[in-house]
Image (cartoon, rainbow, N blue to C red; front, side, top):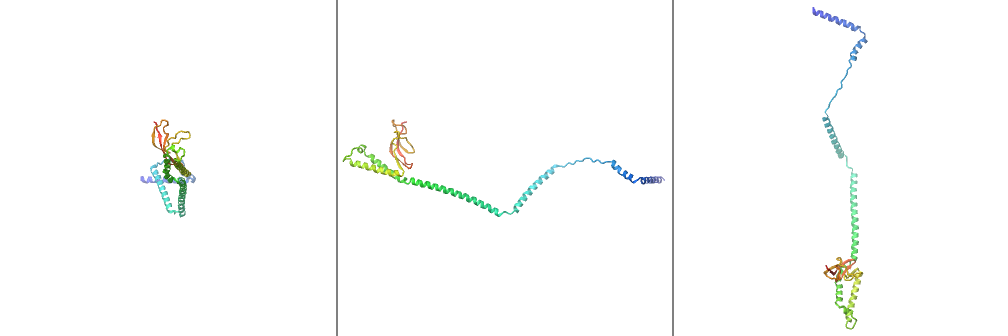
Length: 255
């Protein structure tokens, strides 16, 4: 009985509700449906997401390395794929050949000019000192003329001519003439003789010069200064400015 009563009441409530729902206009029902949505606005709270940067940095570095490797690989592949231009290669070889030939040409010209200057200098020296060996061989003969003339005493040479000394004076005169002609002939070719015992322009004795003189002995002489030449053992000779033979002299040394 109790169950039946509850069932009847529930059916009565449903019938009342259904009758009231159908009696409400359509616009009111739509408004009632939208009203809960309007009266309840949805508010979304801001959300935050956090990501780890370590993996991202590693990925970026890996990407850069891949790009470099790809670039190198692409460049190598392009270099391998691109064929070498034979015209360009031949042009570079010709340029190198031109540079080598130019260098050889410049060196050859410089060597030729040096050879020309050296040959010219040798020819001038040959002309200037052509009689050097011949003159050296004649020096002893010239010295013998001096020794022969010095062997005759000065008083006999300066004595008046007489039948007794006429032959001696003629011999001395002939020796001097021969010596003068010989020295004149050699002088035409640049050979000159000098005597250090002769005094200079001021009337003073000549000083010792190691470039022109050879000191054979040194001695004291109060009337002369140190370094003065007091005696000539053998005269010197110069050929075109070059000392052919140094004069052998005695030098004063008072200290």
